[in-house]
Image 1 (cartoon, one colour):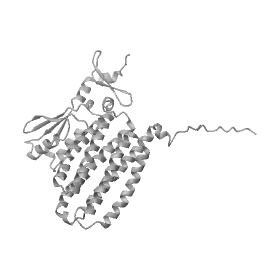
Image 2 (cartoon, helix red, strand yellow; image 1 turned 45 degrees about the vertical axis):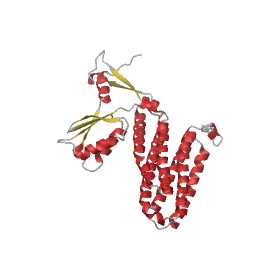
Image 3 (cartoon, one colour; image 1 turned 135 degrees about the horizontal axis):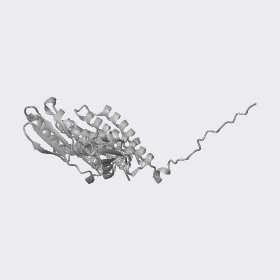
Image 4 (cartoon, one colour; image 1 turned 90 degrees about the vertical axis):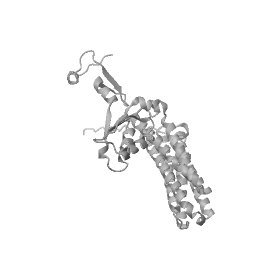
Length: 345
């Protein structure tokens, strides 16, 4: 098969017979035609960050993360004089958290970062489940630390949060790439276009859960000096609260993949009961630092889990399984409007 190219376009791009052009498949099954020089420039595009303009603390680190998530493979950090020591520390710290990103070249005025993530090695479902396990582990270890008054266990929980960030950044990078590159979508298992925004939301909620759980672990360490003031029945009540919270979160993730509407609905109702229990506890809890803040963070995690359960219900309704069809089914009606004939009198 042959394709005729518009003559004006060919002249504008200096194309002549025998030149190479690239046919790039898009997600909607259209083909984009690009001259070789443009296609090659897209592949080797370099993004330059002027570190001299990143005066606020953490700004350079966040810009690098943003470039990574947006799928930019070659990132160069420059300075007109010399890259500041604190900027070098930021670069080294964040590179350790971003899978596939490494320092390729380093001089006093330039640091070149290159990403070599192979999408074939990762599946989106696997990353969602992995992030769910990490977030749940941080929370369960933090609450076990409260139960056992074990400061070391709380510190171990805190140390896991970096791993949650690493998985989150990688998953979002692949998810955004899947929206514009059909081959990446196929490789990571993100071919359901309707579910991509929901997956991004689930990832965000799981990462927030890890943040809340880390904060709980820090507060449990702060609570250690007040341990003698803390009644055992209060500790048991908080721990029971956390077990229900974990159940909501973990089963909600399971429902996203199993499409179990009944269980997902039950989790949302469970969250409502937990909210009532939380309100009662806030009124009855002793005046001890960090205590109410821990309960508040657990409530926010339960809320995120309930929202994920809601997403699971919506996903189940998008492509109903036999189980869903027992609850809801489609009946097609003839919507043709009747034609009224007007007779002359």
